[in-house]
Image (cartoon, rainbow, N blue to C red; front, side, top):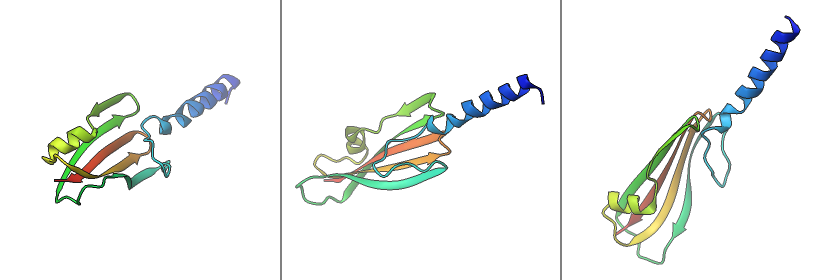
Length: 108
């Protein structure tokens, strides 16, 4: 292997090492470099526990394209909720190339 080929290989490996962080999500417990799939509680109100559940998600592809609406208001609309009891988040990431965040709202 020539010196030029070695430099290219090192630069390619260095560039690829940054890919796993392209589509990662901000979780309080951290992310799995290979795979993440967990729920976190975010907020509980003083309102009575509700029977309705709404979900709103956004996705990230390679850190290049992000789409969706993971807001609390979108989740409330999805579940026809007018009074929020709790808000949770579901994080999913695969190899840092695909990430998904869902906001889950319960209430009445």
